[in-house]
Length: 119
Image (tube, rainbow, N blue to C red; front, top):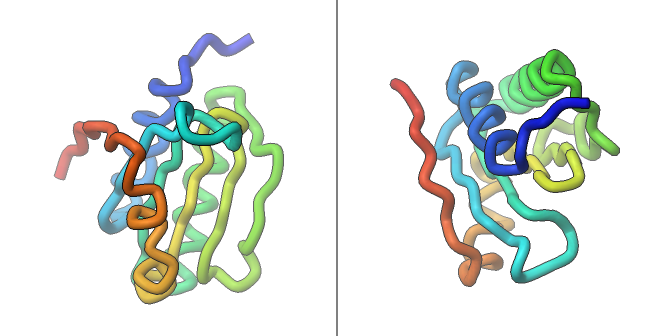
């Protein structure tokens, strides 16, 4: 059994996304606001192809750590892909789609997680 905590998974996924040049990687803590999970990770890609590549990178990276998503939604369109890892839910957006849905604004009460990402 893999012993990563939810916050360790958040940092691992953020690093995976950063390595694939995701834009504006954000993590918010939602555990006190909803039963959906503990954290949202939100990131953008500049094309549907990049969004799909980001999704693939997260899936491959999490699989290598011993975690499989409960479900993946939106992969075909590449406009908004959701990967559900129970405690963490990863939202990967095409840039304009992210602006339209503005999850960060909808979840403005959720505290941001400080991510240490290397350039």
